[in-house]
Image 1: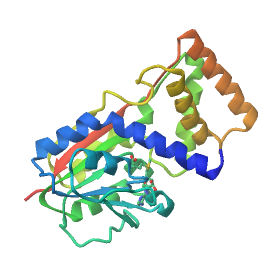
Image 2 (image 1 turned 45 degrees about the horizontal axis):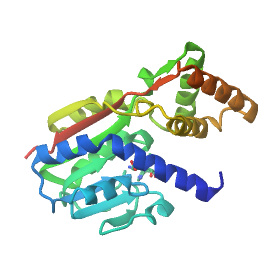
Image 3 (image 1 turned 135 degrees about the horizontal axis):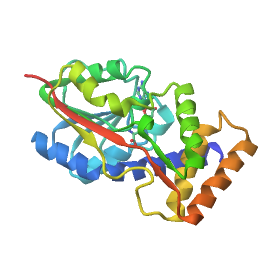
Image 4 (image 1 turned 135 degrees about the vertical axis):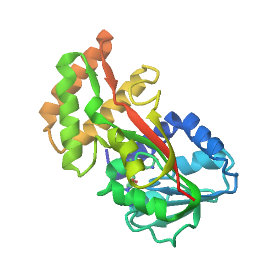
Amino acid sequence: MNANEDRAFWQARYRQQVGWTTELRRYALAASGLPKDARLLEAGCGYGALLDALQTDGQSHLTGLDIDFPALQSISGTAKALCANGLHLPFPSGVFDACLCHFYLLWTNNPMQALLEMKRVTRPGGWLFALAEPDYSARVDEPAELAPLGELQTHALLRQGAHPFIGAHLAALFHNVGLARIECGILQTAAGEEAPSDENHEREWQVLAADLRGLLNSTELAYWEALNWRARRAGTRRLHVPVHYALGQIPL
Ligand SMILES: C[S@@+](CC[C@H](N)C(=O)[O-])C[C@H]1O[C@@H](n2cnc3c(N)ncnc32)[C@H](O)[C@@H]1O
């Protein structure tokens, strides 16, 4: 893949992942009683897949922030886009009604600091929504001969500085940053749980391979890819990574 194809691939992947949290997103906004013109910030918005979905839902006051300037060029519609570090949000305190994130804490250097900043810029009585954060420690890979793939991916994520077990700690993080009315759980739809088409299978492999490239050489990757496809054709392949969410309110 060249750089443009690479970006197009991740953009499509993030759009797919936003589909996994549609119900949760709508539930969170309805349960919190936020109006359509609530001031919403997405920290770590990437190419804006979640912002697009929020616009489709009728939310009219959106800001997205990411450290990746080229990704922000894809943000369209009325959402404001800002290139900055989520660990030092460039906003005064209490200027948003809610702050959301989606597959973001996994990638920040300091998830606690990222949440504290999201809390700081949200008004008392406002909300934090961490809609999707994975827990690779509870990953299921079948058949058993493919289990090392999971361990390798976790290792690769750790090497990239990511927090692959963040989902399991989300509830504790929400408590520790001092949020109230916390609701947490695990998403029902996530990687590997969608229609078992060859296309989805190939996309899951590409995501895995992208993480493994820094760790394995092309011969090793080809070996695992062949095993992976053999299991797929035999109908024995299963890959499940639990994805957690948490909602919480800023105390008044
Ligand atoms: C997996 S992507 C998710 C993008 C988007 N939330 C979505 O679901 O479509 C994670 C994003 O977090 C951003 N990110 C990681 N650390 C960051 C930081 N300290 N400040 C701002 N953005 C950050 C990355 O640049 C990347 O765009």
